Length: 200
Image (cartoon, rainbow, N blue to C red; front, side, top):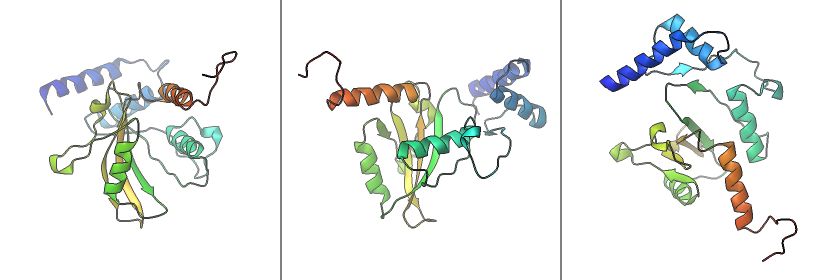
């Protein structure tokens, strides 16, 4: 660990110890509880501190990150029959969301084909050169609206499985940006009209 990184982690630990439990968010309380149980934060992962829930998840507990990920993905994909399981982990990064994603397609799809499809997709930047140890890092996504995808490879445990590593800047790429991009696409495709204005 570099001396600068050590300094940042030490500062984070001091700040967390000084936080008052009153008014602290669940994430802050979880971090404080972790420090009390295991000592100061290192560069290792901090597992999300959430109570164990029954296997059947309902909208009643939709505030949990793992449940939100499942429900929102099924909503976007238009089917609650699609099998999705998530484990959310909080890690000490300044900004960014990262996801290890496994997908299974109806028909075989090679990693190279998936890479080509993703390279052609708007808003996606492929960072995937295993020979040069190039793969997406949360720090690479900071300040960018693109979603970075890498480590695209076959999942040998499934007949048509692929594994991906995906990162994005959660302050830039999220519901608000997606909403704007969808609106821009609707205008571009001439699918929305301004009331009182004649079509061009």
